[in-house]
Image (cartoon, rainbow, N blue to C red; front, side, top):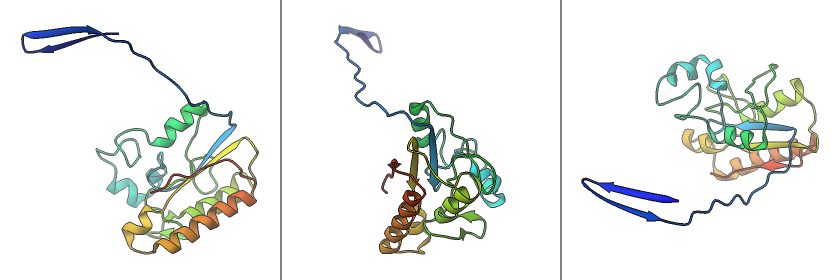
Length: 178
């Protein structure tokens, strides 16, 4: 690798060894199923009038709560999968919804919380998981932001979500923390 640094009218040239290591190999997956909040939402918020109105302009990008693709899109690409968003009875394996909290029910009356996302997916899309499915679950931040739960409640809700997913056959999880 040859590097040239130019500062004003001065320049320096140096040759340096450069190595790229890729030390992670993902096991093959047939499906990536996503539950959670805005950290994983790939556009479900656009279906909600409140969210789409408030978060429709820059820096928000294409219905995401970010200025570009969210982390799960990079993971999906790494697996070589096409992950699409969906809600309710519509197909789509990314069920994450910006504004959602842990537990059952809905935030702001319309945003499905993580437990509701899981229930809806299992009832309307697929009732069980295969051994090649990878399930991601990232939620809890909005519980703190909205002040509606303490850490014991959040942990209890997340544990309940994991148990429900495992009971439905999920055995490969990605569960980032806050």
